[in-house]
Image (cartoon, rainbow, N blue to C red):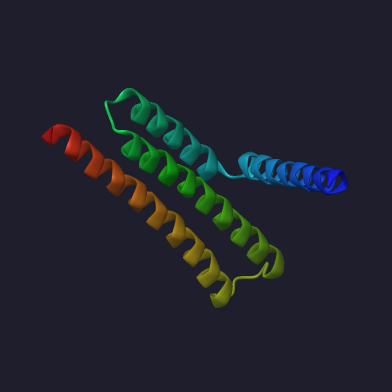
Length: 124
């Protein structure tokens, strides 16, 4: 049991290190990640300061994090596509455009949640 816990602890630590390296690499090279992070920080601050319910706050925070995760996945797609297809290609463009569309949909979802939450706040 102790050996299993140590092994799982090490695995979890390595996962955290790899995740941090991914975040740091994307942060260093992707202006959009930095922009979305700022927008998300302001969104979380607003969610904490406004008189919202727990579920509303959770929704706003979760969708903001989902948007950041989607931006990271888009960065991963773009990086791999650029590596594998340095020359313009229709399939490379399609992959990159689909990643961008995923980010746009996540942003629309987060924005729509804010609209609904603020509408409910205004209607109280």
